[in-house]
Length: 83
Image 1 (cartoon, rainbow, N blue to C red):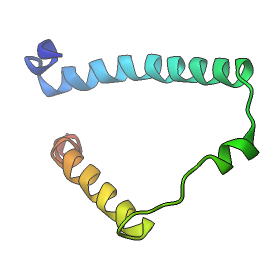
Image 2: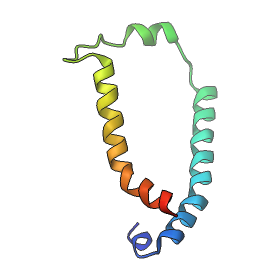
Image 3: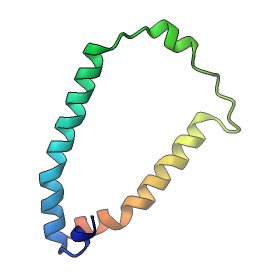
Protein backbone atom coordinates (compact mmCIF):
# COMPACT_ATOMS: atom_id res chain seq x y z
CA UNK A 1 0.00 0.00 0.00
CA UNK A 2 2.77 2.44 0.85
CA UNK A 3 4.53 1.73 -2.44
CA UNK A 4 1.52 2.88 -4.45
CA UNK A 5 1.63 6.26 -2.71
CA UNK A 6 5.10 6.83 -4.18
CA UNK A 7 3.81 6.28 -7.74
CA UNK A 8 2.45 8.93 -10.05
CA UNK A 9 -1.30 9.17 -10.50
CA UNK A 10 -1.33 7.44 -13.90
CA UNK A 11 0.57 4.49 -12.46
CA UNK A 12 -1.85 4.22 -9.54
CA UNK A 13 -4.75 4.06 -12.01
CA UNK A 14 -2.90 1.36 -13.95
CA UNK A 15 -2.37 -0.69 -10.77
CA UNK A 16 -6.05 -0.35 -9.87
CA UNK A 17 -7.11 -1.41 -13.37
CA UNK A 18 -5.01 -4.57 -13.05
CA UNK A 19 -6.08 -5.52 -9.51
CA UNK A 20 -9.81 -4.77 -9.72
CA UNK A 21 -10.79 -7.58 -12.17
CA UNK A 22 -9.06 -10.14 -9.93
CA UNK A 23 -10.98 -8.87 -6.91
CA UNK A 24 -14.28 -9.09 -8.80
CA UNK A 25 -13.51 -12.66 -9.90
CA UNK A 26 -12.61 -13.69 -6.33
CA UNK A 27 -15.83 -12.19 -4.94
CA UNK A 28 -17.88 -13.99 -7.62
CA UNK A 29 -16.17 -17.32 -6.88
CA UNK A 30 -16.80 -16.97 -3.15
CA UNK A 31 -20.44 -15.99 -3.78
CA UNK A 32 -21.09 -18.93 -6.11
CA UNK A 33 -19.41 -21.35 -3.70
CA UNK A 34 -21.51 -20.05 -0.81
CA UNK A 35 -24.74 -20.29 -2.81
CA UNK A 36 -24.15 -23.93 -3.72
CA UNK A 37 -22.65 -25.20 -0.47
CA UNK A 38 -24.95 -23.57 2.08
CA UNK A 39 -28.61 -24.11 2.73
CA UNK A 40 -30.84 -21.06 2.59
CA UNK A 41 -33.99 -20.87 4.67
CA UNK A 42 -35.50 -17.51 3.78
CA UNK A 43 -38.53 -17.70 6.08
CA UNK A 44 -36.37 -18.46 9.12
CA UNK A 45 -33.91 -15.71 8.20
CA UNK A 46 -36.64 -13.11 7.83
CA UNK A 47 -38.18 -13.88 11.20
CA UNK A 48 -34.80 -13.61 12.93
CA UNK A 49 -34.23 -10.01 11.77
CA UNK A 50 -34.96 -7.60 14.63
CA UNK A 51 -37.22 -4.63 14.09
CA UNK A 52 -35.56 -1.33 13.33
CA UNK A 53 -35.41 0.62 16.59
CA UNK A 54 -33.45 3.55 15.15
CA UNK A 55 -34.00 7.15 16.10
CA UNK A 56 -34.47 8.27 12.51
CA UNK A 57 -36.27 6.85 9.48
CA UNK A 58 -34.30 4.70 7.02
CA UNK A 59 -34.02 7.44 4.38
CA UNK A 60 -32.15 9.69 6.82
CA UNK A 61 -29.52 6.99 7.27
CA UNK A 62 -29.33 6.49 3.49
CA UNK A 63 -28.71 10.20 2.88
CA UNK A 64 -26.12 10.33 5.66
CA UNK A 65 -24.25 7.28 4.35
CA UNK A 66 -24.24 8.42 0.73
CA UNK A 67 -23.06 11.92 1.63
CA UNK A 68 -20.16 10.48 3.62
CA UNK A 69 -19.19 8.23 0.70
CA UNK A 70 -19.31 11.13 -1.77
CA UNK A 71 -17.23 13.30 0.55
CA UNK A 72 -14.61 10.57 0.90
CA UNK A 73 -14.43 9.93 -2.85
CA UNK A 74 -14.57 13.57 -3.99
CA UNK A 75 -10.82 14.22 -3.95
CA UNK A 76 -10.05 11.09 -5.94
CA UNK A 77 -12.90 11.66 -8.40
CA UNK A 78 -11.91 15.28 -9.01
CA UNK A 79 -8.33 14.26 -9.88
CA UNK A 80 -9.59 11.43 -12.10
CA UNK A 81 -11.97 13.78 -13.87
CA UNK A 82 -9.12 16.20 -14.50
CA UNK A 83 -7.22 13.53 -16.40
